[in-house]
Amino acid sequence: MVKNLGFLLLCMCSTAVFAQTQAASPSADPRTEILGDNYQPISGVAATQSHIVVYRLADSQLPGVTTVLVNGSYHASLLKGAWTDLCLSPASVQFTLRRPGASQRTAALPVSLKAGRTHYLQVVDGADALALQTVSAEQAERELPNTRKQLHTLSRVAQTCEPVAPAATN
Image (tube, rainbow, N blue to C red):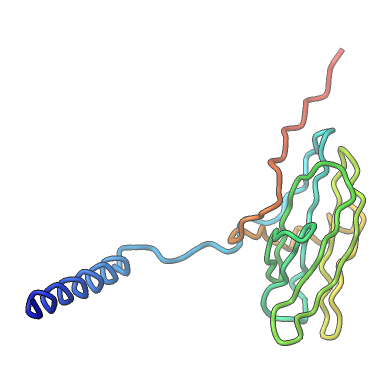
C-alpha cells in the first residue's frame, strides 16, 4: 500500500514538472504588447454616446502606472505617454485616479458627459500632486500625438463605441 502511494506521488510530481517545462518552451512568445499605435484624432461620436479619452503625458514625474476607475470600476492602468478611451452613455460619471504604493494617493473628478461629444481628461501626476483635469479638444489634439494607446488592460466599464452615421446628402 505504501509502495503504491509513493509511486502515485512520484507520477503526480513528474507530471507537474513536465507541464511546467512545456509551458515555458522557448518557442512560446512571452511578450505582451503594452503600448500600441500613436494617437490618431477621433473622427466622430455616435449621437447616443459620449467618447472619453484619458491620457498621461510622457513627462510625468512619477514612475509606474496610474489606475483609472469609472464610477468605482476599473478601466485602465496608464503608463507615462499613454492614452486610453471608452464610450459611455451620457450621464454624470465619477472618474478616480489611484497610484499604487505606500502613499496610495487618489484623486477624483466628476464629469457630466454630453451626447455626441468627445471629452478629454489629462492625468496630472507631479512629484507631490495627483489630479485629473478636463482639457479642451485643441489642447488634447496638440498633446496626444506624442502618446501611444494603452493595450495591456481590459476595461470593466467601457461600452462598445457605436459607429458614427454618415452625414446625409440631399
